[in-house]
Length: 187
Image 1 (tube, rainbow, N blue to C red):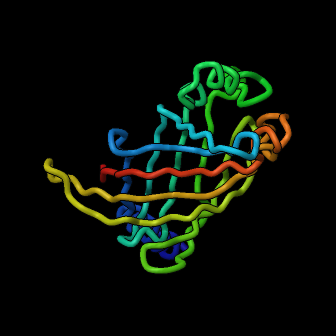
Image 2: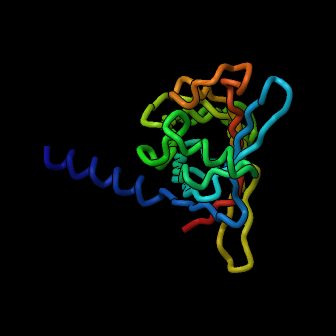
């Protein structure tokens, strides 16, 4: 029994020792969203303050865990009045729920460098599973000799499922397009 426990612990330790942690290079990364206003035009926004990381033990990232935390107070739609409204209780309620988080739970390969990334999105205190399209753009090395990986994420979520905004879909679309992209540096 002791021998089995030692072997299991050794295997777990060796697997975790191969795990690599990557952190977002914020100068080369972004978290954006788009909604449709009055069924006529698209309004884009972004979160200026966020943290993101990838943990993976495989070079192709097929076992990766992606984590993201966005500061709701950093939302920017290039309109101060709209940005202020997005902070209010009927929208993100940033005083009560200051962050939006995502943590992946599975990665499924759908082609070369293409994956479906499923995980838990928490917004305004509501957590729901979402699936996003993930592209691993490529890897490189920066001038400081650190390894880099470039990724793109895209998907759609329903804002009302998270309790964000009570206005009708004819005013602001219920479907919100999410896009995040950037470079991650190996720690």
